[in-house]
Amino acid sequence: MVDDSIYSLGLDEIDIKPSFRSTQIYNWLYKKYVDNFDDMKNIPKEQIVQLKKIYSLDTIKLSNIEKSSDGTIKYLFTLKDGNTIEAVLLLMSEKKIDKKDGYIKKSEQYTFCISSQVGCKIGCSFCLTAKSGFKRDLTAGEMVAQVVYLKKLNNIDQNRSVNIVYMGMGEPLDNYNNLVKTIKIISSKDGLDLNTRRQTISTSGVTNKIKQLIEDDLGVQLAISLHAVNDKLRDELIPLNKKHNISSILDIVKKFPVDKRKKILFEYLMIKDLNDDVASAKTLSKLLKGIDAKVNLIYFNPFDGTSYSRPSKISMIKFQEYLNSQKIICTIRQSKGLDISAACGQLRQKQI
Ligand code: SAH
Ligand code: SF4
Image (cartoon, rainbow, N blue to C red; front, side, top):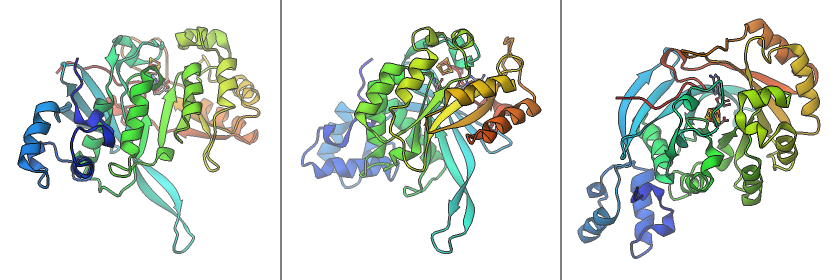
């Protein structure tokens, strides 16, 4: 597939002269969200003709929108080759210190959950995305376009900050080069200007790519999908564990630079009678010694044909309380968008 999407290009990669024209184009794409070259009013007509010849803007097409009763919105996009991907908008309340009066205030924060691949190669036993296999990596343009669409469709002001979580379909670190390109494009000051500190890469633990991420020093946040405290169970849940086991992941994570206010996030999927006991919480707290970690417990979200079950609320709370007693910050992720299958692990290719 030829990637002629203009969303795949860094500011200095757009073939146009003089260079300020690239900044103007970025302004149209990422501040005004135009989806047509003809709407770029300050670009001379001849150059518009030229741009249309070499670049495309129809990188993804909106095919469906589903709204959950909790405010979560799931978007289905069709790619130019007919594959489909999903992206999710979540509304989360965030506590912030008011700069004027110093009081802690709650504000609604937008979080975009972005897909990085069509399907996924890792094949986790608890994940619906894995069930449809792997089709292909997304281009940077296809990832950038998801962000642009979600901002545009929700009339989100160009200056409003949003959180980006690479937690949709796919393993982002398996598509490393395009992921890094995406992060650079959406963080560009002349474009969407999204802070890298508000971008989180969630990974099943591709250690060599985590190492690369440390070397590339992008300033992004890291989330590790741990889900098990021993290799036997983790091998069963996440086949990649046979190559990148728990201790190798923890070793590399110890080297990951963390922001003063942030920590490394460990996601722990709770599955009934498998890993939801306090003994596992004890082992987890030992494993995390020496790591600036916080833990986010996730309820297993069921789907047709799975043999796993959702844990009880009480087991989640006991697990959380144990970790808290060990001075590890532990939160329970509210399952958002369950009624529209937009929750973690429920995204997949759809026929339209
Ligand atoms: N591939 C990356 C990011 C996408 S998956 C990763 O695995 O981290 C995003 C998160 O959803 C991961 O933490 C994943 O373990 C979790 N997840 C997958 N299937 C799930 C399910 N059925 N219920 C709850 N969470 C699930
Ligand atoms: Fe891939 Fe993540 Fe799903 Fe595992 S949980 S199959 S790594 S998307």
